Amino acid sequence: MTDAPSQPLPSHARRSLFQQLELDTRLLGMVGAFILLSIGFNIMTDGRFLTSRNIFNLTIQTVSVAIMACGMVFVIVTRHIDLSVGALLATSSAIMAMTQTEILPDLLGLGLNHPLTAPVTIVVGIVAGTLIGAFHGWLIGYLAIPAFIVTLGGLLVWRNVGWFLTRGQTIGPLDDNFLVFGGINGTLGPTWSWVLGGIAAAGAIWGIWSARRNKAAHDFPVKPVWAEVTLSAISAGAILGFIWVLNSYQVPIGRLRRIFEARGEEMPEGFTTGYGLPVSVLLLIVIAIGMTIIARRTRLGRYIFATGGNPDAAELSGINTRMLTVKIFAMMGALTAISAVVASARLGNHTNDIGTLDELRVIAAAVIGGTALAGGIGTIHGAILGALIMQSLQSGMAMVGVDAPYQNIVVGSVLVLAVWIDIVYRKRTGDT
Image (cartoon, rainbow, N blue to C red; front, side, top):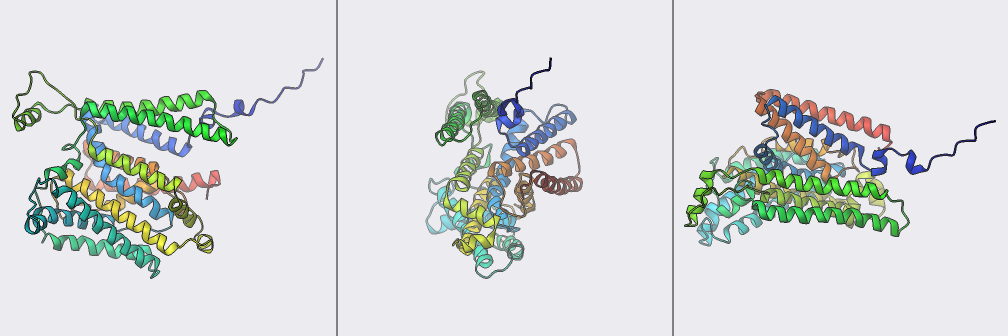
């Protein structure tokens, strides 16, 4: 008696766990690398790396580079590069520092801490950054000067323009409302952080199930229900866990006393509270969501990725690639100016070396995050994760006691390794 022929398993049974969850294996690799990096540094620092205090500091240190990395994704996707972002950050910071300390008091009589000082200063800085970025884009798009040359010249020009604007001096103190965007001087507190975290978790779950309904409505294959539930739980857990860690970082008693004294109140006995979510991190989240919507849901985003995939075909199809280049670099300039707000607010003043080597960190963050230098491929969330990995690497080495030259050697080596891994990954997956 012969055995009956075995029946083929259903397609969903033959798929691996990760395939059924439809997770990006490259993103998983980055997350895994970040987790291993964090655990390693936590062991080497006797448990200091993964404390709530260090995680809080790590997040606010990452924000400035991560914001610029969001814009750098679009630049690199269209097969360009921007080497001027660090210098442009310095110029934008100098413009905003001079605006709030000299120009507004002299011209309009708006001194520091006036309600209009910070908003006007930020608008001036963003407009300046946008115009400079658009000028770079015009040189690249309409005069056909290579982006490498234009932005290399910008690196030299704008760094020294910032120096002349401030006459080489450190400018400070800055407006208190402006400093809110720096991190520790501007947080939501535990209550509002939990509220925002709950809204974000609910939004993430809604997004996952909404995407499932849309796929089902158009007869596209969908993940198993258990996979959707698992992804929903992971997303909500990650968001709420992050908020819990930030809320766990307690405000020092001395600082609390000064806050109550400034209000003319007496601090209750035994009162404690956490910092919560920094305003700068909230700003990064808003920018990341906005840039992701542009990339995935708008005509501009489709044009950007189409041009990066095949510039000649994009131009023949009617896309104005020259104006598109102007828009991309103008966007990069605006995001750089916003980063200047965060960077100078975190320092509490403007210094001439602000933004030094940021251009390399930003490019490295985008590339480590999966943006292909050949163009056409890149994600916003990948660039932010790349910025977090870069900052974690540098902060961890500093905590261990690695000298700055060795830190730069490691960072440079990691960048080359990341590009090589990206090349190998794309060859194996056939994603060119």
